[in-house]
Image 1 (cartoon, rainbow, N blue to C red):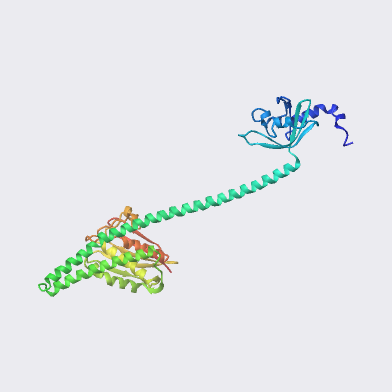
Image 2: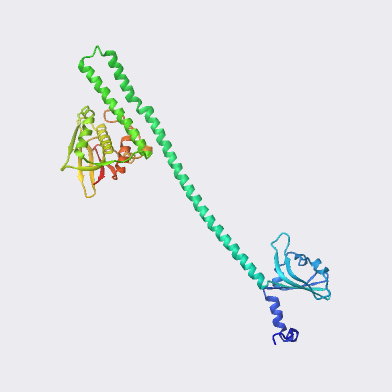
Length: 385
């Protein structure tokens, strides 16, 4: 029954067959006259035409089809390529029939072709996905590289700023103490036979104090440079704070005495610190020297400690001129620091406070200042217990 001649059942299904031929999207049908004029085409075939319908047959061409042996109705069976030279072409499996000088083209995509196309599309999709993932990875890598380059560029600008500041300090701030040293030594050399013992002692004392200040400045520059380059290591040890403090005070008491400033140390109980000795000495020396610099004659400086649960807070308090809020914000900023003269015209570089911040943070603490103009300053820093 399944192999019944279709011609016997067509009459009662004519309308349905016509509808299927016109609207089946996978079936392409066209009928041409012998002079290559289009007589009929369903929707699917019409979509394949590019320009003139007859000229849309690329391989074989309509002329080649007309030249085929047509002793039998079926003149061609195989892949038919349609489209134009300037467009994307379409290949479909087709049968071409010729009867009464008319050409009937019936084409579609067979199952094997569908499977092959599906495999091809699957492969292409996989390749596209791989390329997309690779592009995402490359994009991420490029973004990270760009971010690192921007960070390095900022660091380079910062290093150039540091370099310029170093050169400015070496050219100007170091020039003054050396001029003082040369002036005092030349004066002493010329008048060594004229001056009495007290006069010579006074001149030598001035030379000694200037030498110490210059040495400390050079030491600060070297320490700060090493800290910035990562060459400075921390070696923590247990130490008595009072011993450290008294050692520093003894080294700079002449500086305080010259302005008749008293330095007082207060401690409720013995304080043991776990610190790098060189770092804590540098911090105290700079903070006390800074307090002397900005304190008027007959002023005082108080040093005291406060023990907490996790930190010991050390305060260097002075009765000096104080600091404005605007300048407090600049104290720890290398790029905006400006050398300010002390109450007796003392010169400074600002490196001391930067070095204090660097060392305090390296030892796990923090540093800050509480101050009002005309009411003195309290420089505070913490050391982990």
